[in-house]
Image (cartoon, rainbow, N blue to C red; front, side, top):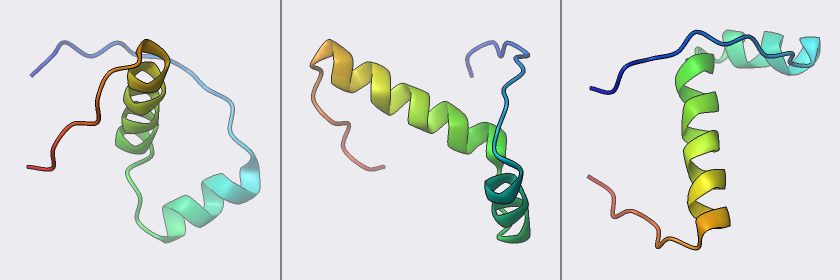
Length: 50
């Protein structure tokens, strides 16, 4: 597993509340969104699901 970096982000209160109520792992969800954004910007192909 890659080393993790502690970061702070600001998120709309309503979406944060809804995400928590749904049981989403906010850290993992944000990390996955960043990975996808970087992949798209670099023009890399989408990873195959595991």
